[in-house]
Image (tube, rainbow, N blue to C red; front, side, top):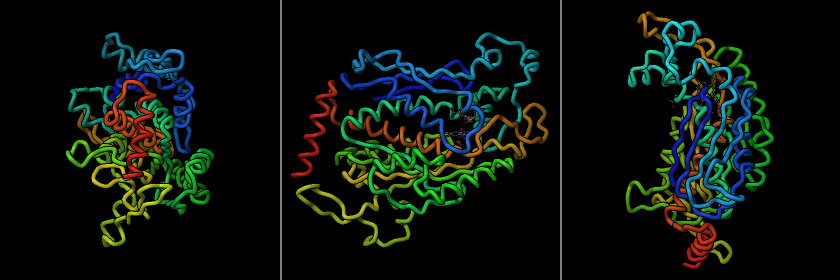
Length: 390
Ligand SMILES: Cc1cc2nc3c(=O)[nH]c(=O)nc-3n(C[C@H](O)[C@H](O)[C@H](O)COP(=O)(O)O)c2cc1C
Ligand SMILES: C=C(O[C@@H]1CC(C(=O)O)=C[C@@H](OP(=O)(O)O)[C@H]1O)C(=O)O
């Protein structure tokens, strides 16, 4: 499966086209809207999230609640567009008029794509960069991921993202008793954290960052249960599924690192304390006694829960801006201030959940290909049975 996205942050709409979904998957706009609403929540976001009420329109590929096997088109309109029609219009505009609306951006923000993108594409107005580099685009990535999640959940596979660290405050709850608990608790928490004490401290840290005109980052974790074993492959570098998940995680705006299971901690422990011992039972088939490796061996799923973390740097736009250079005058200036979030880690946990879900669904469809969803279901059930009895 593949998808493309298009759309500027303050343009009329965001669009995605998903190709390769099997026919017969039940799919409603409400399935996707639930995910879009979750992405919009989360403590630390700026005013834009009060303007937008993200809802999807399915424009193709679905009829009477089921996918047709043809491309699925999804559109999310930007409610903010009405305030930007002149600045973001497609018709030519005179330079003086652009000056007049006072929106030309010439002072790049350190840490954002402004300067790199401007030099690369030759844009003297860095709005032409930030409109597309903005994480507004994650809206339709979440929409595509929600379709993937629907496919996965119909196969008995659940994916949940939550927050484990913000601004140096670390959650002390290291595990959860069930996916249901994980979903419920993190939905109730404004920072999507299982540890209610740490969550309070995280909110204080976000308030302080905001008060100081600063920003903070953190760590999110995505947990997946129900994946069959053997998805992905060791036979070629570009078929390793853990590598694809790492790519997906790092493709989220502001994400700078990835860990599976105990992650970097494995560098500090002997093999006897890292590798997960193998066991077999009538009920579970093969399983690992621990899950230090986070669900992967040899680029393939082991059938254990997938546990993958992503590191988000602090938001680049600072209300107390860092030093920069005006690209028109070459004089030192403070960077531009765009309306901004002070912390988007809770929202990013939802984004991470959806981009990981996309990669997993995509890998399943590629490996166990079936034109009809009902056939895919049978194949997955058979694969699970086979692996258990092997
Ligand atoms: C959900 C989410 C919201 C974000 N909100 C902002 C924001 O309000 N202001 C900002 O400067 N960056 C924000 N970012 C981060 C920038 O989009 C990102 O740093 C920028 O695109 C440059 O890419 P890079 O950090 O991956 O190099 C956000 C990221 C995510 C995932
Ligand atoms: C719009 C979203 O996030 C935006 C991501 C973003 C950035 O630079 O990445 C900058 C801000 O944009 P604006 O200036 O319009 O407020 C965020 O609000 C969103 O998540 O839907």
